Amino acid sequence: MDFKKAFDSVPHRRLVLKTEAHGIGGRILAWIADFLSERRQCVVVNGVQSSEAEVTSGIPQGSVLGPMLFVLYINDLPNVVANYVRIFADDTKVYTRSDVEGAPQTLQKDLDSLQDWSQQWLMNFHPEKCHVLKLGNKRSEAIYYMTGTDASGEARSIALEESDFEKDLGVYVDNNLSFNKHVALSAAKANRVMGVIRRSFDYLTVEVFLQLYKLLVRPILEYGHAVWQPQTKTLCQEVERVQRRATKLISSLKDKPYSERLATLKLPCLEHRRKRGDMIEVYKYLHGFYKTERPQFSFFAGRDTRGSTLKLSKPRYRLNVRGNFFSERVVNTWNSLPDQVVTAPSVNAFKARLDAHWKDLPSVFDPECY
Image (cartoon, rainbow, N blue to C red; front, side):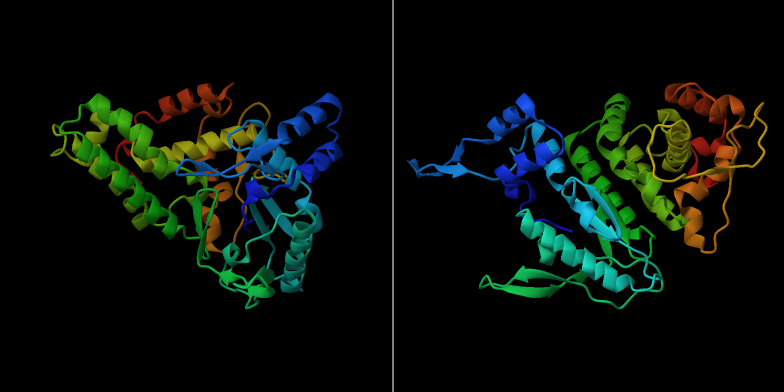
């Protein structure tokens, strides 16, 4: 779901009312109202200034307070939706299961309710930029509509465009959950950055290369990996190929085998990095770092509290794609870790113990071992 000029559309008077409804009053509310009021703007063209106009809407961007005020303003939006809804800043997703009876009808009703909310609170949606993503093999043929305006400004019903993939908080999700698109785009972006580095330096020392690569390139290849973990050897190789090429920028190493280059640079292969990252996420989840609506993992029944207290049970699943979900794919690796590692007192201690436990594995620097 896409708002039209989300941060510029929030009306100040309604924002103050909603802020008060959230229990904020007294001097703090007066301070917020003063922060928003008496703002004026003008346009200057070729040294000629227009008359000033009062600004009665819009969140002051670039401020610390602005994002919080926007969240307060749209915080009641989920209350009008019967299905599942997720909001992050101005990014809104409404979703449901297609195998539920009457799902298309309830989803369309939710879209209608959202538009009623948007009209009441003067936050219009942009139907042309609102898309439908249908996941799985059995996809509904339903078409969904929202009200928009044509070129003349008249209201009309607009069929929402159905897409094969969508970017969700930086991760490209396709309709079969293969994440092929995300891998391809991430690898291409990382290669472009490496191209800039290559053209900017005639010679790269090991120290400079590692700083640039770890800061500018590797984060592109690892962002959100817990979600899009490559499902096939081909995808793993596509991601790894970026680092394989990058390490050849060191002239003294370019003729050596890839695993030897990594060992010399003390740069683990990306496959190992993703595996390590998965374990860190499991540790954080099991130790209460994340607040979730329902348990992500289940433990073995009747576990011995004297040891193996954090062994996970692996759920059964019917589809192969399910086996690549985070909660399923991490179980075997996590259960193989000794208690000394999984019971570490802190995240940093866990990382240190995990690295020490795995330090002699050939797979640390050789992706072919996976």
